Structure formats: C-alpha cells, structure tokens
Image (cartoon, rainbow, N blue to C red; front, side, top):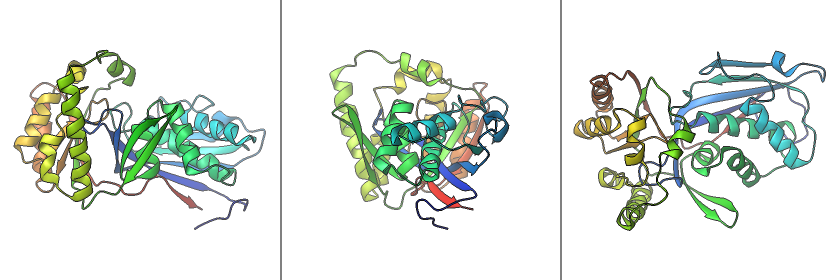
Length: 313
C-alpha cells in the first residue's frame, strides 16, 4: 500500500536484495542484485524507549549483531536524518536477515540500504534516490554493492568528481546465479589489503575489455560470452590465498556447464551463472570445495530486477 509523504504509519517494511559485486573483471564497478533478501521493519515508539530494547535481529547474525546505535541499520538511519537536517523520531527496528554475513553477498550493503530507505520513509521522503545512494556509498565506501541493493538489476558504477555515478541496466532474460557459500568468512578489509598497488598494463587492458563484454552480454542476452568475459586479472588471483578452493570451484562449475563463474564480491562465495543444470553445477562446486576440506552451502538464485522495496503495514 502506498503512503503519501507526511501521512502517519504503523509499520514500514523495507525488503533489500543480496548483491554480487565485481562479477569477475568489474572490480569496484559492477554489481548485480540477487533474489535473497534482508528485511528492515520500523515502527514508531515512545521517545523514552531504549534502542536496545526495541531493536531485534532474526536470522543471519542474530547472536552477534549490535542492537543499539552501532547497528549498521541504525547508523544509516541516523545519517539520513542528519543529511535531511531533521531529528529522527524514536522507532523500533526489526531486522530479518537471510543474507549470510561476510560471505561476499552484500549483507552490509543490505543493512545500509535498508536503514537509509526506512529512515527516508519515516521522515516523509525528504531525500531523493540519488541522495540515498550517495549516503550509502559514504557509509559502505564502495558503490558496487550498495547500488544494486538500492536500484536492482545490473549496475555500472564509476567515479565522477568527488562522488560516484551509477547506471542501472535491466539484464535481458538473465541466467540464474548458482552460489556456493563456504563456512568461513573473509573480511573485506583483509581482501583489500591483499591487492597489489599496481598491476601489469596487459592485465588492466584485459580487464577493461572483458568488463565491457560482460556488460554487453547482460544487455543483449549474449550469455555465451560470459565464460571468457568473467575472467579477471585485477583481484581474484591476489585473493586466492584468502579463499581456499576458489579456483577449484570455478573450474568445477565451468566443467559442469556453467556459462561463467567468479568470486562474488571479496568472497568467499563463488558464483556461477547457469541457463540449465543448476543443481549439477551447485553439486560440482560443493564437491570441489569438499575435496579440499571446505564445507559449503549452495543456492540457486534468480537475478533480482527490483531494488529495495517499501511496504506500509
């Protein structure tokens, strides 16, 4: 149900998709929304309520995520209010998380975007979508995860002056994403530290061409191009030591019929695109990781064409 700005509300629910960033060669530039969702629900409460008492977390991260002002949803809500120049009223927050934490599927971005969108709705939508994206990028540090979480589909992000610009594309008849999620975490900061300060020119040129081919494949439906287009020389080789089984899982996915495969974000999730045989590809990745002593859960996910969506309850 839609609500006009300024009208009262009982509950606002924001549903945010998971994201896969980089997609191989598109380091810090490309991101794709996937149909696995976190939910942020807010409701008005009395001004004297303690934030810890009115913030609940269910699902992924429930035992460990903070409930007070340090929670990423709360921080993002506060940032929106500060940008709008108003005070955020006291609200109860309920997070229901399906996106696993620290696995390269955008759990932090989902929290940031969920908080930004929820706060903007609570305040009567004083900020534009571009404003929300700018705030989310400031909090996250990189646009390639938050952009598809907010906008859906495939996003192309690039630097413009001191900020970031994002172009949303709607993939043409997109393949499904098969993900293998290992049972260990990779900290984004450690993955960043693993990257060299420079790379050979030939590797940079290779990545430019393949990133362009990848975008073209999604725009035109030429998914036969993905196998070559998803090859990367900028980040995956340097992060392989942090992601045991990455190369083996990618090779197994391709051998099982995947259109292309890569590390999702900074990992450790390995993502493969498939037009058929999704279960066989998932099992092949799982077995390749198991042979190295790595336990992984697998899922088959649709590409999500919608970004964060709002429902009034």
